Image (tube, rainbow, N blue to C red; front, side, top):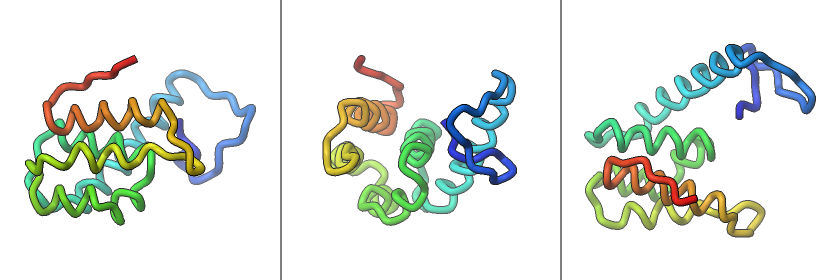
Length: 121
């Protein structure tokens, strides 16, 4: 979910929105991450690879992508066989591996390398 409304106000616990507002806020946030990924990735990548990186950035922030080895490897060679390992490094929260992050990173890596969105739930 979003942490800020499109006007910049922080979301607070207990706030209520409609389904159409939720979709509007999602599209607003996604467009910001699409723009950011477009600026950070200089290599020629396909739509699935781009989408995987937008998902990664939506979850972790553009700062994480910007400073990551993942970005450096992709910009050097978007077909590097080590890219899935770079995704899989981003599974920690508070120093603890989270099962949900492991699944998300595997799905993003799979989309990036195979062009398929596959969640293993």
